Length: 409
Image 1 (cartoon, rainbow, N blue to C red):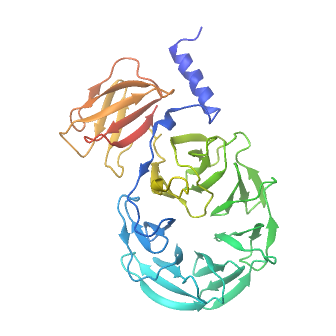
Image 2 (cartoon, one colour):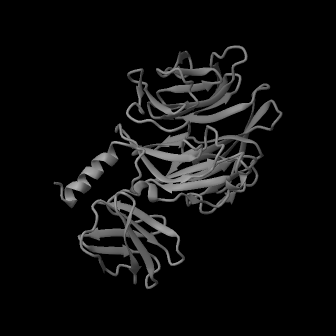
């Protein structure tokens, strides 16, 4: 007969083998940020050491969406933003009807300066990206302008009626997603090959990180390694319940936002190099969200998503989730709060000093094990015997909002 410790160990084993079982990760809520003053459906970019939202206009945030600063001067209809070289960030703006694109630049992000106009015929700019001292403007007809010391032009070999919808690139790989398939280039756009993951489901979203291309195909995720020129099925051991509507990554995590069986939104997280996916965060009960490029980024350890729903427009906006909710201790966060659990003693340091905050501890199955008050910053609190291990600790500010949540061993 198993004792409590063995039972907890078995529960942990079961939970790590499935993404559909409720776990402590599902106890974290998404935070809705301040709405960026740019339009109804902002795309998200990371550039100029900031989070940038782009739609009819442009705004920047240096605190992961808690506040936004509108950018004045740059024309409307920004088509892309990217970091260049020498601490320069550039932006491409093209009017709804026009045969040229304006290039603007900034150093540090505080003010933007006009640089030049580039003739782009009658096509629409799809994306702007940079590698080294060359930036690339991709048109929906497959034309790509390469601007460095001079202007070069090459083309993605699209067929008649086919349009480019996204371009992602790095120093070792270029990936152009079109309305009918995916093209890859490993020689800077000189030659292209049609490529596809080993599935009959078409590619809907792509993202490039270094020499790795990530591709979403319905409810499945694949990665392409430019060195080996091979596809790897990242979701072969799990089954997402619905279509992937966004994905992104940082150095530690790959994340995907998927439809639930009811058509809402659930995020999944995988450590880079692992085969295991964990469901994280509360389900976002927002319907009718479709796969859309540039709607999900990882900013300083936060997953940030831009949500546009035809069925629930009141929920449209930008949301964020702390991906580092499962590290053993936190010395500094945006909220300047740290949590440490030593045996049965809980220490919480927070910026309210002598004000009372509350804390909750959850077991692996999501059941609340303890709830109490923390009388002051760094005042030790002795917990009852039998603290769950692992445990989820949630600390609430004096006003009741969650200011920090971590998973502790």
